[in-house]
Image (tube, rainbow, N blue to C red; front, side, top):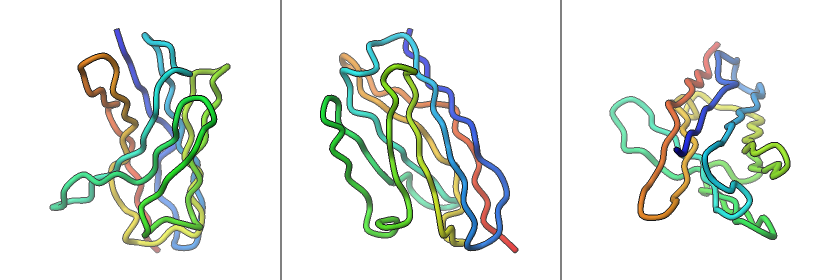
Length: 116
């Protein structure tokens, strides 16, 4: 079955960096678009970044453009999110996501806290 396991979250000071990883299994990773979402307390879950299958075209929410980079390693079945110049408003639980067949799949999430 499809499994997505995130890692790499933690506590970081404003201006710092983190790299999130998502290990995928149970499906042909290279054939599917992959996404990072986040959900802050009291807010709806929002799409942060996505990367297409094949040529790896990326897209970002405006609030992270120029600071976050999504990438994928199809040989390792792993999705990444490099987050630089982090701000307190980036604090959230970050989720890896994909849509396979007729189902939407989510990881368990990893907490990112940006605070001094």
